[in-house]
Each structure stands twice: as structure tokens, then as C-alpha cells.
Image 1 (cartoon, rainbow, N blue to C red):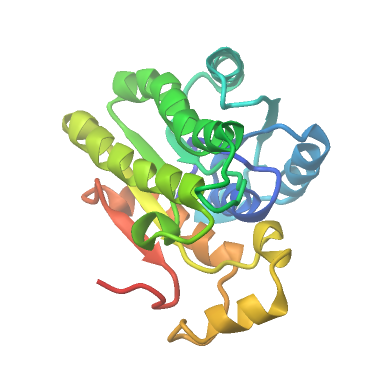
Image 2 (image 1 turned 180 degrees about the horizontal axis):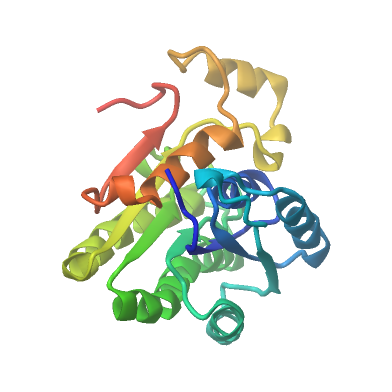
Length: 256
């Protein structure tokens, strides 16, 4: 796979799956705009990317990274962020909607503010970012939109009604956008990770992790790189005949 000359935007790029996706896309030759709220962490990821010389296709072209600090749950910061990215790179080829948060609580006790914040960050941001990115994709008649959903958007999870609803919503958004933009050679797909070792899951108890492990046929917890590998494929030319699809990356935890 060769992404030389492509420009990718990755939200939630400061850590975990977003960071892994940004590094992987850069490894295949893409220039990457890193979007999140934590500028210090974004700068660290940018340094990692720029210190690496991508050898995809044997070009030896230095990977480019551009940091944009924004709260993408709100429309105006999103518009400003994408205006800045387009000014820097001139186009957007690939959008990875990865930003996500949790505010866990049983539904009967869940505060409206926690519902709203999760839906804004996990779902509304994907709609806002997609809206800003597709203008460039339509002009060049080529684009890849990849939404990071979750196994819990497919099977639900007690105590995560807001999170599960937001991730299920991303699946519906993926299919709708795939249908709308397919005729312009723009694909829209989703990646649904299962149990992945990230900062979000590291806070869970050992007992919960062991119980989850028993449900995974492959017998291990996934890594951010497992997800990033799939994102890189869906961003490539080789995935040009796939759209509206949800790619499960869960070690077999959920099948069918």
C-alpha cells in the first residue's frame, strides 16, 4: 500500500488508537494533520512522525505532520481547524474520525450533561468533520472516510448507554455517507475495535480484563496497531471497492 502524496486528518490523534493511526498512515507516506485538545501530546506525535522517513515506494520523502488543537464537538472550532488544514496542505484525501470519550453510568443515573458530551465528541464531531472534509474530496473525486466505532455500538454494554448509542450512530452515519458519496469515488467505512489496550481500558480492573479475555477466541487483548493496520488498508487504493462496511477488529469476540 502506498499513500505517498495523500493528506490525512486524524481526530483524537494525541494517544491510543488515533496516535497509532496517524503513525501508520505516515509510515505509508501520507502527510498527517493531527487534531485533538492536548497540544503537548499532539506535538509529541508530530515529532515521532517527522523523525521517521517513510520508505513507502522507496521515495525517502520525509513525513509531514501538522498539529491542530481543537474541541471538535463544536461547529466553529471544527470549521477553523479544517480551514487551517486546507491552508497548510491544499487538500484532504483521508479523514479518520477517531475522537472519543466515555462518561460511564447506569442509564437511570446518567446525567444529561454526560449523555450530551459523549454524543457531541463521539458522533456529532464525525458529522461536522465529514462535512468540512468532503468539499476537497468532491473536487478531486477521490476520498476515504473512516469512522472508528466500537464493538459496543454493535452489542451494547451495561453502564455505557451514551457510548454505545454514539458508536451505533457512527455505523448508521457510515452507511448513509457511503451511499451519498459513492458515485464520486469517495468511500466511507467504519472500523469496530473490540477490547484494545489503551489508556481508556487500562483503568479497568484486572478481573474485568480477565473476564473479557475469556470471550476472545484469539486469546489476547488487541493493540492500537491492530486497528491502525485496518485503517491504513481502508485508506488505500486497494480498498477502493469497499464502502458502507463495518470492519470488525475484535479477535472474534463478536462474530456474524
